[in-house]
Image (cartoon, rainbow, N blue to C red; front, side):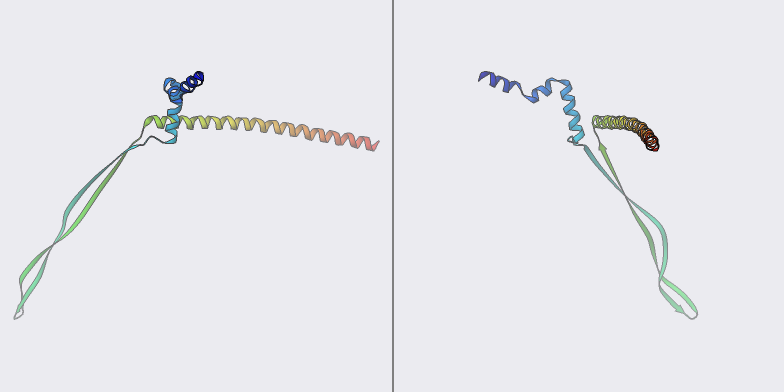
Length: 152
């Protein structure tokens, strides 16, 4: 009974992970692969307003005609204003570099495995072609032997 209790207490997986560096690295890499570490994201929004006077127009509003002469009595000045609003939104995403390194190592390992599988596939293809040639030679030899046996 006491022995079972001691074994149950000593078999704590958290303590095993914390005490062994290899196990800790394996757990850490798996956490990074699953994306459980949240990225820090900072949104900086900077908005500027620029007012630019483009054109000024003088517009007559009242005219008086005396004899054959036209007199302008009131002028109105009108500005055509173009209002340009510039909004710059900068999104900065801070990503954990150790996660990137783990994922790059996974990609390199998978590419290395793919190369190994391709080499093995080429090797097996060559073996299959060689065996096919042997099979064809055997069939031709058997056909010649059968032809000679039946002819005589």
